[in-house]
Amino acid sequence: MLTAVADGVFVRQSEFCRSNAVVVVGDDGVLLVDPGVHAHELQALARELSELGLRVAAGFSTHPHWDHLLWHEMLGSAPRYGTSRCVATARLRRSDAQAKAARLAEGVRLDLLGEIIDVPMRTDCIAWNGPPARILEHQGHAPGHAALLVSGVLVAGDMLSDVEIPLLDLNGTADPIRDYLAALDMFHEIARDVRVVIPGHGAVGTADQLLNRIDQDRAYVTALNLAQERDDARIEPSAGYGSDWLPGEHQRQLLYAQQRAGLRPSD
Image (cartoon, rainbow, N blue to C red):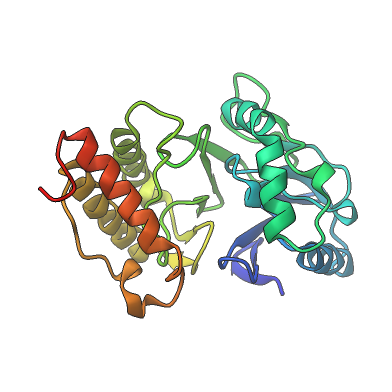
């Protein structure tokens, strides 16, 4: 079910990893960001929009991971955008993304996965007839990752989550730790313009919670930069969410940081 989080901005959360689809209402349709995962969820979202008399005017994928590239024919054929680097990466890794979607998402159209196009050049906003949706591109989590700032709402993609630790792009950049810290600095700079933050996975947050999440993520990534362990409630056994995979991702990132610092894991 669509839940209002700000004027003209709605969220629908998936059963899969608490993924958030974001709907922004414009003058003659909606902007649909990272629409969802399972086919029945995409269909339900399309029916809800139809019942409200709304059509999809544009789509946007915050980054090229498979669960942010999905679509359904019931959502229509509106242009679906991503940053240039996101689009290029999605095309390059499409077969791998389709394999993951086939395994993890129920009944999705694999041929529609990743059918995104570049945001027009020389613009930092999505081209659509609605409130300005400012594109904030950064690296650290995935190539061409972008957040959107629209109507005081920060659509953060796979960052600033209350349930997931920072997950670094260990395959796509020379220094993902530095990139991630730079992205957090960017979020801090624009925080005064944000009333609501919507992470790709997890709970919607207030402006105060945004600042807390930035600080929590910076502390985690700074510890990685020093190749040090750090307690984080999101990877405690009692956390519940992601207990079967998040601790493993943390250990992988810690090992990367230790190797980067020239340390042995036991040092």
